[in-house]
Image (cartoon, rainbow, N blue to C red; front, top):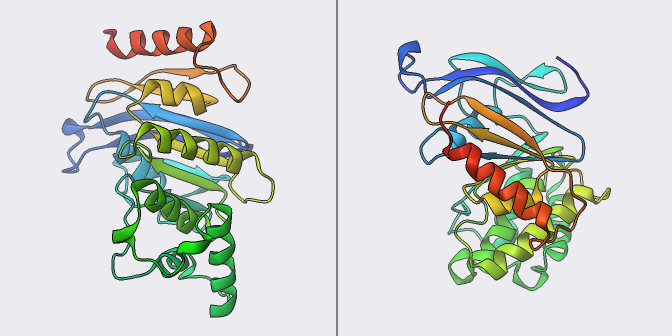
Length: 254
């Protein structure tokens, strides 16, 4: 495999019961390099989130492997972080301590962990909420805390599972801009983002490449390169052309 890619997904197959005759994913291969944003789209239930968890090292594939900088991922690693759809904040911890969870395995002193967490909260516009608990936060604020926690350990790859689907459109738009800024900001460690989404317009807005999956047993129908500069105008004919093309690919039969 070519080490120019941060993440290289190579011939991944998976079944929940371990039976090769019951494959959910079949021979999935794609890659994500530096400064690339890859979205995974496909029909509901086709295994998009499962694929993301395999990349994260949370689930073992039936066959194939995922490489990070040429080394196989067999378990969760520091350089690959995960942002969940449902925020996954600990309700008994305040915002600061939720972010510090991302530094649980760090060798930093507690004061350095606190300082890093506070710095991230400032970057995400949450500096006044460090002592607040998740139950008083809006959905957008909760997801900002989740993203801050994910990047606290300075990962190079960020995996996101439908991170904006539970948010209103204005909040989602703001967070999408934050993620793009983060990807291209050299002061933040993240160099590559892989996101699962059911929203084709969102995928076109954010992505350098879009992996289009089929119905189960799930294979790759196409990997579409999006050749547009950021920020992208949804009213641009090229934008709507990409959206239409991806929709047509999703609904087409082999």
